[in-house]
Image (cartoon, rainbow, N blue to C red; front, side, top):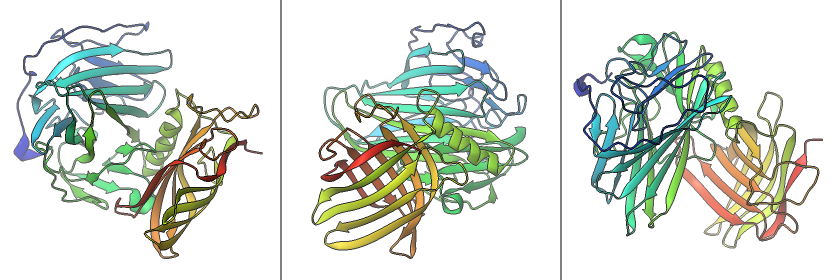
Length: 430
């Protein structure tokens, strides 16, 4: 709870509501009493309430995120799970339960649930008709995590510049709104998780392949376009905190969109939060991922004087005892650097329809992984790598995207494109 931002608002601003809501399940979601299309469901471990504007916690449902069921962590005090979007360094729109709705129109809410997963997609637009925001929640019924995919789309007729999206989650753990313990796990564990805890543990995390421009554990200035990072890593401090991830997009053309993926994680310990991060990472690929393969790479990307030579072998599993091989020599503006990775933090292997490795003995072609290693034998770094096998020869067929960051999440090196020599190979594990 942020005491100086408490808002006693129990109704969203009056907006135009359309109804695309459908319920294919035998156990339908709860609907709030106001007739709006809010979405409430209960799984084996978690009870989840989502407002029709796309944030967690709805006043009419009366709950937000409970684990164990009956123990609330978001709909307490200031109900502050929410989001904001803006552009041109000034225009700003924000919505959460307590803050209410500042500038969004509801477009639709669609239940896409399956036998195994509760899935809901909420679409909203800024009231100037420029930006459409889609929040899609995937909640596996028997798991302790929720996957959130956010799409930011330019629906105007002109280019939009300096787009910014902020995601805020005000954890109030175990039904109390006093201080909680907060820690960002990048330095300690190499994982982009802003974790909070009292008796139970929760986290807001960036999925593999998703990078935030700024990260804060102490609120930022979520209510406005500007950025004010006051505590990017609380390091276990007992604070009145909130997890904030900020994503900057330099520009979007008309009908162009950008996608980000995050996880809500629940558990009884830090170890379980980390375990659930890995499970959620694997679940990204339509509910399952390949576990018995590996991605081998021996290639060059880019050209002199900005190029990288990589030798890698990344298994499709991040369980203990499964280790990667990754070395990279890169030249940037004629300066040589060397990286070796020694820990596989997370990995997902899956089949991307855009690539065909033309190998009958493998059922995946793309790997997204996060590794931890050292640069120039002295600087700890995080390596995010996406590799796609497009068949042989690999030159101009295989795709690679590599980002190297320091432990404060600052990008040191980034390159992407088709390999200029060598290949990426999707292979069986043995």
